[in-house]
Length: 374
Length: 229
Image (cartoon, rainbow over all chains, first blue to last red; front, side, top):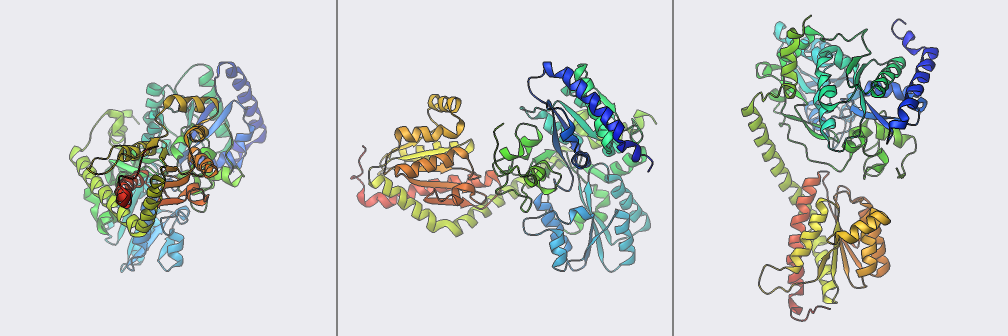
């Protein structure tokens, strides 16, 4: 398959691993600790786990799995809000499939569906708009979830609903942004990360420039990365090369998709419909300033938060889980005080346990449920 | 496509990149609403706790009164914000602010930083309270611990040592109570059913204030007979 098979080539992978090991060996004498490279995006984490990339790396390189799964970081309170909306008899609640299993304080959307709520899985917000056209006597709500990647499709759908004069469609907006969150990690005083693999599909929308501050102000190399195994390996090599050469720059490995200036129509649509929230809670990480968006007042007719009087988001309370320390590279998952006790895959308190690709879930499922010394 | 074309949308999406405060009034309204929600939640957590735990708190107060009745001392421990609660707990008992209530011995086990740093450095942070219990703890004393997770290693280790020494154990925890609740090492363990560290700590503060009141009331019949060692 074009653009897929070439990026899974075993021989090329072996060659890249060899190059990574060579450069890591070069860097090693200058290190006082293992190099910690974060891949922010859940899609990258999935590839790393699926292809066993972490096991191929030399001992002086560690991957730190970031919180970049918009489903995993959804706070419990917002899932509760979703369930409350879905349980309204006049509502058809639509959502991406992976959001169905995220636990709220009492139940998930899947459990609410089992209890009789009309909840339907869709592949895009346009599917939800179509449902609204076909069910004029029902209120169709689309659960708008995801980073900058999925914001444009939500925005275009709202604009289309407005254009057609559809009155029974609304968006429950829980879109979040990656850039302020990376900044929040970088601002932590004991942050130990040495470089970043940046989310390629987010960059597809926003371009390269919003990441510049990471290299310029924080002196950390960043490579915009694709999602196949060779993309990851090549990007890792590029980050290591920067570290070896004492550079900090934003580089684009995913040039087949990402343009330097991003996607102009997508940016125009999303900034037409959405505005930045003052703060938004990320499960396990607390509130991060300006990391979420809501619909602008002029689109209140399509805003489920306004139409159905959903409570305003408050600044998150600090919780017992230590996801923040894990994503900064300060502690390992098993060092968290509630790892494997209050926080398990069945009862996930933090984002890193919600998805099977989260760092905590991965370690838990692989038997790292006893505390180990550093 | 030029940079300029997308500059404004990017400025709108990431105001911090351009040091821009977009809508100060809107921010103020959001923050005021957040205050209202948090204060309401704090009240709700407290009400739910006392609805379910008043009898257990009274039993804890009787336990503390028994310690003082038999000329024991209270020893207190915690980490971080909970260490502030441990210190505050000790201040209440050592420094009664109302007339007619005696000063009672209550020792904050984190007050000696030299010992704490020595043990932490030489043996490990897990042992900072255990070592001090070995030196100071005696049968008939009481050990009070504060932990929002209930899973602090150094507290659990200290509780274990306390049971060996014949010390009555008391604790305030949060969440599901963690190991403090499940280990069986804490004779009187009260748990605030909340995952918010701040809400848990707010209940703990009100608890030991009330605990102090109750303890003195329970000791009232023997007031004047409680002597220092």
